[in-house]
Length: 325
Image (tube, rainbow, N blue to C red; front, side, top):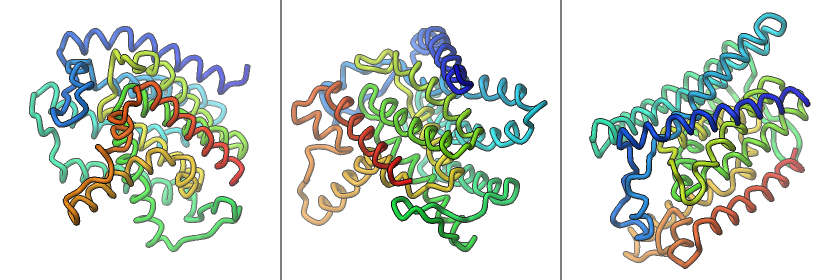
């Protein structure tokens, strides 16, 4: 069994064990899902389902990441060092989501973090990660163009804002995808798997290790997140996953590949933008509700069907993405 498979299995087991321990604690603390009255009526029965479960994934990433850092520090210090920014960006975005969830669910502040404070936190993490890659790891500002199969080099004053926008857009898109049981977890697991396969092909061991941790963690969490969900990830999980995906893509110099493999989160985001723009101009709606998974839900699709179809679409586009490199 190769090292990435061992890491994946270990993180899967850790995720399952921690979920068994933490989900009852969240339930006891009454850290429950708050459903919008204007949302799908079928979601009202989910009121009170333990949320903020993304903390499970963050703990696994820190524990496994720390263990593997120490494991590689003696004989392969360059791999150990390279793991740190990948772990840091995922945990950093996750902590912003945790603070938001904590204020809403523990402190009972229904507004959570203000939009400005939340955006500022995400911006700080994104800028810090970008600078670390450029100044400490010297990865350069070159970027791979899918299908063309060539690299282009951006001026640094273009690359930094571009990288930050990629990270903020990805976290927002994954956050919007997290609307029904198991959807965001399933879709992001497939996307992360695709990026991990690319890292294996390119021989980028640190990304392979980090990707294996994420895949195993997500699969373990998914056992408790599928419909009917026993736990929701909250902003803690969705922002962490979005940050991890964007962080890996930038590390591999393939942020443009996200336009292909992250097609579902992109469509979710576009559906909201189109709906808002069209409603402001005409007073009418194109979709029954956005993000678009709610449109299909209100059209009679069961949650499991939506998750299956959206996951299949993601899988197909990830395969296309692999051909694009």
